[in-house]
Amino acid sequence: MFLSTMCETNNGLEIPYVRVDLHLNIISELGNPAQFTFKLVDGGVNGIIIYRGEFDEFYAFDRTCTLWPEHNEQVAEDSEFSGIFTCPECESQYLLLTGAEPISGPATFGLKQYYTVIDGSLLHVYN
Ligand code: FES
Image (cartoon, rainbow, N blue to C red; front, side, top):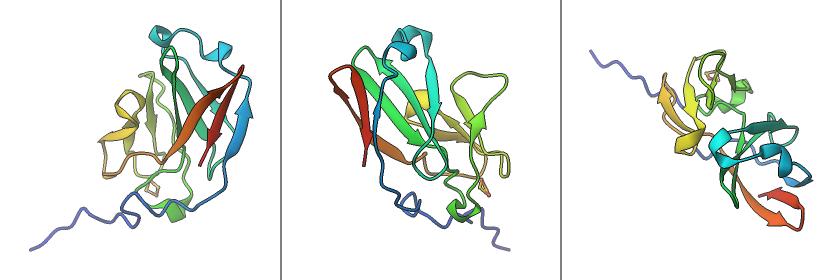
């Protein structure tokens, strides 16, 4: 008997395209990289997670679970472990520190990533 756990439809590529072009005044709110502070902002398909990996290195990920993008399920911060986001439907867990790759559950593709660049005192998040 063949049991497939591959019910993913997106291959990491089919998160719908939504134009992202944000200039955010949140750099100071993201604090010191060692504090591992992240911010949730509107935008993308289901909101965007932004965190600071290094002093001048920022990451932005769409909150859409990659298992079934058409479910439009928004990953939420794990209540026990900081930096882990969980899909409320399939319970796939994504770890920000590893580029939002899945660490448990059925998803095999990481959260969709957006570009970031420091623009003066603002953080430009775009695709
Ligand atoms: S989105 Fe329905 S499975 Fe995570």
